[in-house]
Length: 181
Length: 181
Image (tube, rainbow over all chains, first blue to last red; front, side, top):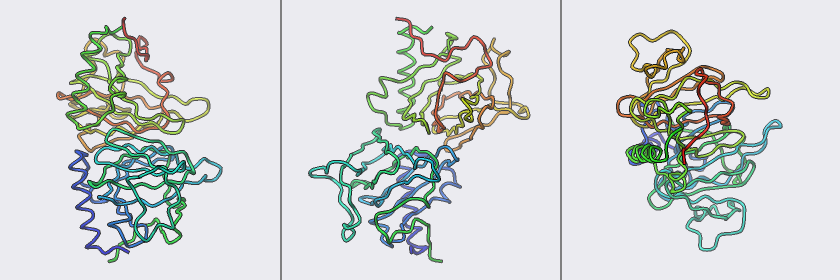
């Protein structure tokens, strides 16, 4: 669980990244910025900040911020009620992001799992995305991603998003926002 | 039909807008920038410049440029083979865009149909979008949009895109790229 004070600190850091990347947000979007700590209480290492622009039953668009070296932990989007799982495209807008997916292990990768959490990372085919570069992940495919030393702003274009159906490799993870009052 | 020389001029203008809006494109995206003149041979008034980031059978994301006062003409996205027509969200990133949709006529609108083409514009409920503002259009709903005096960069998030199925109010329109060699 993240304290309100810590959440405010992270929120301000994230807003500075959007501004640096020249991404204009409304006041309401800034106010409702989502801070995901995945229930691990280690947001500087494992976490994600995001604004969901739109999420209909057909498509979804989000603008995500990762702080320097911050990691979105390994997960996949399973099929749901007979429909194929979430398909998503990550497009780097600012900074540098390392996307790890299923496939041959990358030699000398730039990213590595957060210290102490190595057991919960199993795919190591690393794709490096610089601004303007993008990659589309097939449904139900394990993936995780980590920002470079200067953080990253990443657009996500996808089919409908339903965080509750995500399956994380780390069984401790809860994908629900929790802020300590 | 647009001449190659004119296409190059428009392309360079569009690329300057992406740069001004701090949208980073790959060299391939710049090279493949789509210039739509809708077959009207009047691109300074009626036209659209766009980069399609991704278009799967489930979702689509584009980054569009409109030059000052340039208009994307009135059209709708009909149902296709039993599936609901394209649903799309326009998000203004730079400049100002006036989106006209079905609904009560807006008094003292900022946009107006291109001179001489008034017969082919029938919806006048105007929604003004500034950077950070967005609007989602229901499937099969007539709409057209026009940039303000400084042009506009607009992100489009949507379900699958299939330009060939679009139905334009102006029967002269052909939504296929044509460049004179």
